[in-house]
Length: 122
Image (cartoon, helix red, strand yellow):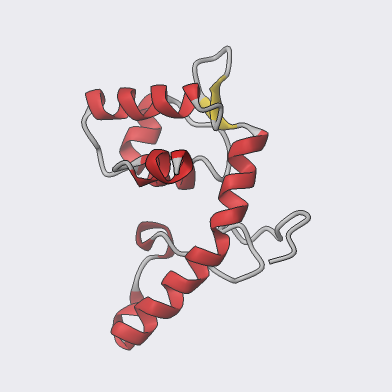
């Protein structure tokens, strides 16, 4: 239930998603999260830091921890389901939506950036 509480908070999963390709600083991460408010961003980053899902690098950028990477991999089936769901609801829109802004993985066996998943047995 604690994991559902953490990831169920607005923007938490989006932050996790945006950090999937590598570290980002506060402002670039904020931009990728549709310019969410700074106060909400700080609060979510603090919660994710406390949960040890992300950590802050010496240069102040944020990145996923090994636990964060595991969580992201665990969410891949949900991302694939969301892709199928979107295609069912709006077949035309699913073909034309931007993968990143729609929060979709480009292929079931990729990380969303075209790179094959490492050690995934989904």
